[in-house]
Amino acid sequence: MADRTAPGGALTLAEDLTLSRMGYGAMQLAGPGVFGPPKDRDQAIAVLREAVDLGITHIDTSDFYGPTVVNELIRDALYPYPADLRIVTKVGARRGADGSWLFSLEPSDLKAQVRENLQHLRLETLDVVNLRLGSHEGTTEDPIAEQFGALVELQQQGLIRHLGLSGVSAAQLTEAQGMAPVVTVQNLYNLSRRDDDALVDRCAAEGIAYAAFFPLGGLTPLQSETLTGVAAKLDATPQQVALAWLLRRSATTVLIPGTSSVAHLRENVAAASLSLPADVIAELDGIGG
Image 1 (cartoon, rainbow, N blue to C red):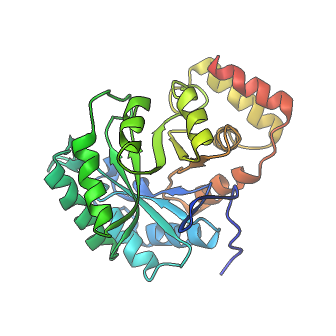
Image 2 (image 1 turned 30 degrees about the vertical axis):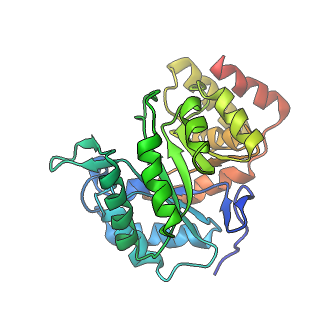
Image 3 (image 1 turned 180 degrees about the vertical axis):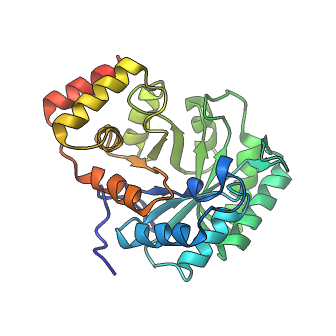
Protein backbone atom coordinates (compact mmCIF):
# COMPACT_ATOMS: atom_id res chain seq x y z
CA MET A 1 0.00 0.00 0.00
CA ALA A 2 1.16 3.55 -0.73
CA ASP A 3 2.08 6.19 1.81
CA ARG A 4 -0.76 6.50 4.33
CA THR A 5 0.08 10.04 5.41
CA ALA A 6 -3.23 11.89 5.57
CA PRO A 7 -3.33 14.56 2.82
CA GLY A 8 -3.83 17.98 4.37
CA GLY A 9 -3.05 16.51 7.77
CA ALA A 10 -5.39 14.72 10.13
CA LEU A 11 -8.17 16.19 12.25
CA THR A 12 -9.07 14.35 15.46
CA LEU A 13 -12.64 15.03 16.56
CA ALA A 14 -13.07 12.27 19.13
CA GLU A 15 -11.05 9.40 20.54
CA ASP A 16 -12.38 7.11 17.79
CA LEU A 17 -12.79 9.70 15.01
CA THR A 18 -9.82 11.07 13.06
CA LEU A 19 -10.33 12.29 9.50
CA SER A 20 -7.89 13.23 6.78
CA ARG A 21 -8.65 16.90 6.12
CA MET A 22 -8.59 16.17 2.40
CA GLY A 23 -11.42 13.70 2.06
CA TYR A 24 -13.20 12.21 -0.92
CA GLY A 25 -16.81 12.87 -1.88
CA ALA A 26 -18.17 9.75 -3.59
CA MET A 27 -21.28 11.35 -5.12
CA GLN A 28 -19.88 11.53 -8.65
CA LEU A 29 -19.36 7.78 -8.83
CA ALA A 30 -23.02 7.31 -9.72
CA GLY A 31 -24.42 7.88 -13.20
CA PRO A 32 -25.50 11.24 -14.69
CA GLY A 33 -27.47 13.34 -12.22
CA VAL A 34 -26.14 11.13 -9.39
CA PHE A 35 -28.63 8.52 -10.60
CA GLY A 36 -28.10 4.97 -11.75
CA PRO A 37 -24.89 3.01 -12.22
CA PRO A 38 -21.56 4.53 -13.31
CA LYS A 39 -20.58 4.49 -16.96
CA ASP A 40 -17.41 2.58 -16.03
CA ARG A 41 -17.75 0.47 -12.90
CA ASP A 42 -14.12 -0.68 -12.94
CA GLN A 43 -12.95 2.94 -12.99
CA ALA A 44 -15.24 3.81 -10.06
CA ILE A 45 -13.75 0.94 -8.07
CA ALA A 46 -10.25 2.09 -9.01
CA VAL A 47 -10.93 5.65 -7.82
CA LEU A 48 -12.08 4.44 -4.39
CA ARG A 49 -9.05 2.19 -3.97
CA GLU A 50 -6.71 4.97 -5.09
CA ALA A 51 -8.25 7.34 -2.56
CA VAL A 52 -7.37 4.93 0.24
CA ASP A 53 -3.89 4.35 -1.19
CA LEU A 54 -3.30 8.13 -1.24
CA GLY A 55 -3.94 8.31 2.51
CA ILE A 56 -7.54 9.55 2.49
CA THR A 57 -9.33 8.28 5.59
CA HIS A 58 -12.52 10.30 5.11
CA ILE A 59 -15.07 9.20 2.51
CA ASP A 60 -18.35 11.10 2.22
CA THR A 61 -21.35 9.25 0.82
CA SER A 62 -25.09 8.62 1.11
CA ASP A 63 -27.55 5.91 0.23
CA PHE A 64 -29.46 8.43 -1.89
CA TYR A 65 -26.52 8.65 -4.29
CA GLY A 66 -27.65 6.33 -7.03
CA PRO A 67 -29.71 5.49 -4.98
CA THR A 68 -27.70 2.77 -3.18
CA VAL A 69 -25.24 2.60 -6.10
CA VAL A 70 -22.41 4.54 -4.46
CA ASN A 71 -22.61 2.78 -1.11
CA GLU A 72 -22.55 -0.58 -2.86
CA LEU A 73 -19.50 0.52 -4.87
CA ILE A 74 -17.73 1.56 -1.66
CA ARG A 75 -18.52 -1.81 -0.12
CA ASP A 76 -17.38 -3.77 -3.17
CA ALA A 77 -14.18 -1.75 -3.54
CA LEU A 78 -13.05 -1.46 0.07
CA TYR A 79 -14.66 -4.09 2.29
CA PRO A 80 -13.20 -5.26 4.62
CA TYR A 81 -12.46 -1.62 5.36
CA PRO A 82 -9.03 -0.34 6.46
CA ALA A 83 -8.94 0.17 10.22
CA ASP A 84 -8.41 3.93 9.90
CA LEU A 85 -11.06 4.57 7.23
CA ARG A 86 -14.05 6.63 8.36
CA ILE A 87 -17.19 6.67 6.24
CA VAL A 88 -19.43 9.71 6.69
CA THR A 89 -22.94 9.30 5.35
CA LYS A 90 -26.11 11.39 5.42
CA VAL A 91 -29.86 10.91 5.63
CA GLY A 92 -32.81 13.16 4.96
CA ALA A 93 -33.68 12.55 1.31
CA ARG A 94 -34.77 9.90 -1.13
CA ARG A 95 -34.87 9.70 -4.91
CA GLY A 96 -37.87 9.58 -7.19
CA ALA A 97 -38.14 7.07 -10.01
CA ASP A 98 -37.22 9.92 -12.38
CA GLY A 99 -34.09 10.78 -10.38
CA SER A 100 -35.71 13.70 -8.54
CA TRP A 101 -34.46 14.64 -5.07
CA LEU A 102 -37.14 14.33 -2.40
CA PHE A 103 -36.74 15.54 1.17
CA SER A 104 -37.62 12.74 3.57
CA LEU A 105 -37.35 13.89 7.17
CA GLU A 106 -39.99 11.89 9.00
CA PRO A 107 -38.28 10.37 12.06
CA SER A 108 -39.40 6.84 11.17
CA ASP A 109 -37.96 7.15 7.68
CA LEU A 110 -34.72 8.69 8.93
CA LYS A 111 -34.27 5.56 11.04
CA ALA A 112 -35.05 3.40 8.01
CA GLN A 113 -32.47 5.31 5.96
CA VAL A 114 -29.80 4.70 8.60
CA ARG A 115 -30.50 0.97 8.53
CA GLU A 116 -30.35 0.95 4.73
CA ASN A 117 -26.95 2.68 4.82
CA LEU A 118 -25.74 0.03 7.26
CA GLN A 119 -26.98 -2.75 4.99
CA HIS A 120 -25.53 -1.41 1.75
CA LEU A 121 -22.16 -0.51 3.32
CA ARG A 122 -22.06 -3.83 5.18
CA LEU A 123 -21.49 -2.19 8.54
CA GLU A 124 -22.86 -2.76 12.01
CA THR A 125 -22.22 0.83 13.10
CA LEU A 126 -21.88 4.02 11.03
CA ASP A 127 -18.94 6.29 11.91
CA VAL A 128 -20.81 9.55 11.27
CA VAL A 129 -24.34 10.27 10.09
CA ASN A 130 -25.19 13.80 8.94
CA LEU A 131 -28.80 14.95 9.07
CA ARG A 132 -29.36 16.74 5.75
CA LEU A 133 -31.65 19.71 6.36
CA GLY A 134 -31.16 22.43 3.75
CA SER A 135 -30.54 22.40 0.03
CA HIS A 136 -27.31 23.27 -1.75
CA GLU A 137 -28.64 26.80 -2.14
CA GLY A 138 -29.40 27.60 1.46
CA THR A 139 -30.61 26.63 4.89
CA THR A 140 -33.83 26.99 6.83
CA GLU A 141 -34.47 27.94 10.44
CA ASP A 142 -36.98 25.16 11.10
CA PRO A 143 -36.74 23.37 14.48
CA ILE A 144 -34.99 20.03 14.13
CA ALA A 145 -35.42 18.37 17.54
CA GLU A 146 -37.75 15.67 16.22
CA GLN A 147 -35.50 14.72 13.31
CA PHE A 148 -32.20 14.95 15.16
CA GLY A 149 -33.74 13.12 18.09
CA ALA A 150 -34.41 10.12 15.86
CA LEU A 151 -30.68 9.89 15.12
CA VAL A 152 -29.79 10.38 18.78
CA GLU A 153 -31.95 7.33 19.55
CA LEU A 154 -30.01 5.24 17.04
CA GLN A 155 -26.74 6.54 18.46
CA GLN A 156 -27.84 5.39 21.91
CA GLN A 157 -28.64 1.98 20.39
CA GLY A 158 -25.11 1.71 18.98
CA LEU A 159 -26.00 2.04 15.28
CA ILE A 160 -24.28 5.44 14.94
CA ARG A 161 -21.04 6.57 16.61
CA HIS A 162 -21.15 10.30 15.86
CA LEU A 163 -23.67 12.82 14.57
CA GLY A 164 -23.41 15.73 12.16
CA LEU A 165 -25.54 18.18 10.20
CA SER A 166 -25.71 19.19 6.54
CA GLY A 167 -27.32 22.32 5.14
CA VAL A 168 -27.61 23.73 8.64
CA SER A 169 -28.02 27.17 10.20
CA ALA A 170 -26.21 28.36 13.30
CA ALA A 171 -29.45 28.17 15.30
CA GLN A 172 -30.04 24.58 14.22
CA LEU A 173 -26.50 23.65 15.24
CA THR A 174 -27.15 25.12 18.68
CA GLU A 175 -30.43 23.22 18.95
CA ALA A 176 -28.76 19.93 18.01
CA GLN A 177 -25.88 20.51 20.43
CA GLY A 178 -28.41 20.73 23.22
CA MET A 179 -29.34 17.12 22.48
CA ALA A 180 -26.02 15.43 21.61
CA PRO A 181 -22.49 16.36 20.51
CA VAL A 182 -22.16 17.40 16.87
CA VAL A 183 -18.84 16.50 15.23
CA THR A 184 -19.39 17.76 11.67
CA VAL A 185 -21.16 20.52 9.79
CA GLN A 186 -21.40 20.15 6.00
CA ASN A 187 -22.41 23.32 4.18
CA LEU A 188 -21.85 25.24 0.97
CA TYR A 189 -18.77 27.42 1.34
CA ASN A 190 -16.06 28.49 -1.09
CA LEU A 191 -14.02 31.43 -2.35
CA SER A 192 -17.05 33.33 -3.60
CA ARG A 193 -19.82 32.00 -1.34
CA ARG A 194 -18.87 33.00 2.20
CA ASP A 195 -22.23 33.40 3.92
CA ASP A 196 -20.99 30.86 6.48
CA ASP A 197 -17.91 32.84 7.57
CA ALA A 198 -19.13 33.10 11.16
CA LEU A 199 -20.13 29.44 11.26
CA VAL A 200 -16.72 28.36 9.94
CA ASP A 201 -15.09 30.32 12.76
CA ARG A 202 -17.52 28.92 15.33
CA CYS A 203 -16.82 25.35 14.24
CA ALA A 204 -13.08 25.95 14.55
CA ALA A 205 -13.53 27.38 18.04
CA GLU A 206 -15.72 24.46 19.13
CA GLY A 207 -13.65 21.68 17.54
CA ILE A 208 -16.27 20.76 14.94
CA ALA A 209 -15.24 19.70 11.44
CA TYR A 210 -16.59 22.06 8.79
CA ALA A 211 -16.91 20.19 5.49
CA ALA A 212 -17.05 22.75 2.69
CA PHE A 213 -18.54 21.58 -0.58
CA PHE A 214 -18.74 23.00 -4.12
CA PRO A 215 -15.25 24.59 -3.95
CA LEU A 216 -15.75 26.43 -7.27
CA GLY A 217 -19.47 27.17 -6.98
CA GLY A 218 -20.86 30.61 -7.77
CA LEU A 219 -17.77 32.26 -9.25
CA THR A 220 -18.46 35.23 -11.52
CA PRO A 221 -16.43 35.58 -14.74
CA LEU A 222 -14.22 38.24 -13.14
CA GLN A 223 -13.65 36.10 -10.05
CA SER A 224 -12.86 33.10 -12.25
CA GLU A 225 -10.32 35.23 -14.13
CA THR A 226 -8.65 36.18 -10.86
CA LEU A 227 -8.52 32.56 -9.73
CA THR A 228 -7.16 31.42 -13.09
CA GLY A 229 -4.44 34.05 -12.91
CA VAL A 230 -3.40 32.98 -9.44
CA ALA A 231 -3.35 29.34 -10.52
CA ALA A 232 -1.11 30.15 -13.48
CA LYS A 233 1.38 31.94 -11.20
CA LEU A 234 1.50 28.90 -8.92
CA ASP A 235 1.65 26.36 -11.75
CA ALA A 236 -1.53 24.78 -10.40
CA THR A 237 -5.13 24.35 -11.51
CA PRO A 238 -7.90 26.68 -10.32
CA GLN A 239 -9.47 23.74 -8.49
CA GLN A 240 -6.23 23.07 -6.62
CA VAL A 241 -5.90 26.72 -5.58
CA ALA A 242 -9.51 26.85 -4.37
CA LEU A 243 -9.03 23.67 -2.35
CA ALA A 244 -5.74 24.90 -0.87
CA TRP A 245 -7.38 28.19 0.16
CA LEU A 246 -10.20 26.31 1.88
CA LEU A 247 -7.79 24.09 3.83
CA ARG A 248 -6.10 27.23 5.15
CA ARG A 249 -9.38 28.96 5.98
CA SER A 250 -9.62 27.31 9.41
CA ALA A 251 -7.97 24.53 11.40
CA THR A 252 -11.10 22.37 11.29
CA THR A 253 -12.05 22.84 7.65
CA VAL A 254 -12.21 19.51 5.81
CA LEU A 255 -12.81 18.98 2.11
CA ILE A 256 -14.78 16.36 0.20
CA PRO A 257 -14.14 17.05 -3.50
CA GLY A 258 -15.59 14.43 -5.78
CA THR A 259 -14.44 12.94 -9.05
CA SER A 260 -14.84 9.79 -11.08
CA SER A 261 -11.28 10.04 -12.46
CA VAL A 262 -8.12 8.68 -10.83
CA ALA A 263 -6.04 11.45 -12.44
CA HIS A 264 -8.36 14.16 -11.13
CA LEU A 265 -8.35 12.54 -7.68
CA ARG A 266 -4.56 12.77 -7.61
CA GLU A 267 -4.73 16.44 -8.63
CA ASN A 268 -7.13 17.16 -5.78
CA VAL A 269 -4.93 15.43 -3.23
CA ALA A 270 -1.90 17.34 -4.50
CA ALA A 271 -3.73 20.57 -3.58
CA ALA A 272 -3.20 19.70 0.08
CA SER A 273 0.54 20.33 -0.41
CA LEU A 274 0.16 23.56 -2.39
CA SER A 275 1.84 26.52 -0.70
CA LEU A 276 -0.03 29.82 -0.85
CA PRO A 277 2.18 32.91 -0.27
CA ALA A 278 0.68 35.75 1.77
CA ASP A 279 0.12 37.97 -1.27
CA VAL A 280 -1.73 35.17 -3.03
CA ILE A 281 -3.94 34.58 0.00
CA ALA A 282 -4.77 38.29 0.08
CA GLU A 283 -5.67 38.21 -3.62
CA LEU A 284 -7.89 35.16 -3.12
CA ASP A 285 -9.52 36.69 -0.05
CA GLY A 286 -10.52 39.59 -2.27
CA ILE A 287 -12.62 37.31 -4.48
CA GLY A 288 -15.22 37.10 -1.77
CA GLY A 289 -15.16 40.80 -1.02
